[in-house]
Picture 1: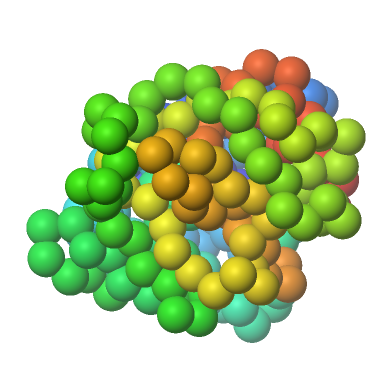
Picture 2: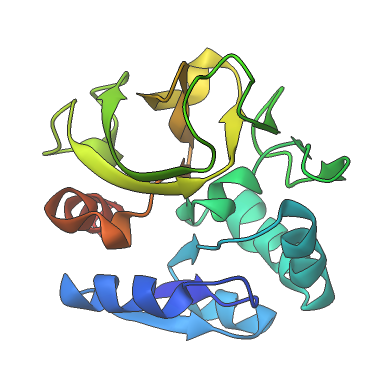
Length: 203
């Protein structure tokens, strides 16, 4: 049973459809108490870091995530904004504290040294840096995934399992014990994206 959190920030229904397409039993979690019924938890999202943290707090999800993910060690997958929220700090419109699930992590805007247009929108190939990660089982390094974002993650190298080059390289997939997160949208990334979701389902 996979709970997909709906906190008013985007694309929960499209993620739900993708999981059901691969045969997963999944549901939309509108209330924090719904997470107690799940064996796995997914946090998708698009939008601003600060707004997302406020919505999660106002709806009681922050405490529920702490209980289910950190204390009970249920598998977690963050998608796009859901990945960014796992950081210690978001630097969008000031500074906003995140979940702090990864050491020395922050979310920052693309540096001016990148000659490419921001936001980073569309298909881009990835470099899998940790081939033993279960999340990328059956997916080749160089596979294309779909991105939409203006801010990107920074964290310690030990937690990075894949990177992407958009003017310079940055992390687009991270892992820490039961916690996984990706910057791209697997639900929009055709075969490779569905393979990744199946890998999460089968953890």
